[in-house]
Image 1 (spheres, helix red, strand yellow):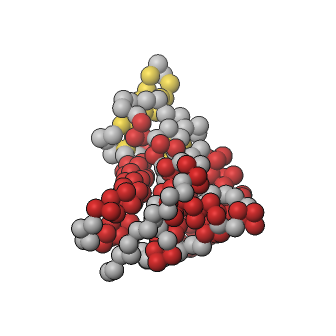
Image 2 (cartoon, helix red, strand yellow):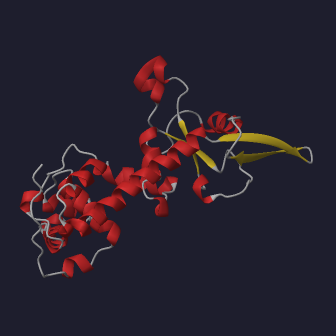
Image 3 (cartoon, rainbow, N blue to C red):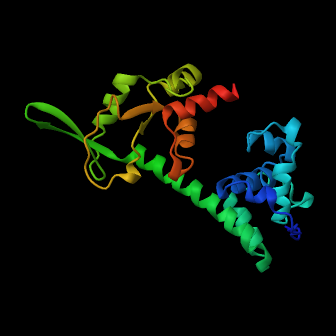
Length: 231
């Protein structure tokens, strides 16, 4: 694959107006999704593109040297594969771009790790003073809390309303994923867990969106508001 040369612009006003995380999103939308500048302004930066006309995302990209030849260059590729393609050039001028893409790859990896941990981790129930107290543990495989959460909340996604059985029939019957309101990756010791308040049920897509940024795990209400905005 031929990787275009970077052509950095000196103007940095738009670049300075946005966060590192927003830079990553803009780069990904341009290189991997092939979005136009106007669409990135609208979909990624949440701006009125009739007013900005794509100048904000274009300013960010041009400051980083990412111009027209880069649009959609990695469409259909994983971030990891794109990183390898750039590294094959042996050109140090791509180091800053590699830094941004590496952040995206790390974010995806951590998101998947968090979701898989929630799906695979196990639970135990202990009695304390005649009262049932629920605990989460990293090492035992007794998914009683998960079952209890599903008994309480059902099998319909609490964020988007998706129902696996309605969509897939018998194959999807009783299937749903369980999300811990307090991410397990932040818990180092046994903690008391209330399956009604501390656990929610969500579909696979919503579960990954909740964990998309480990340093900014979404609440159920935050995710629902995003879905409402898109609709």
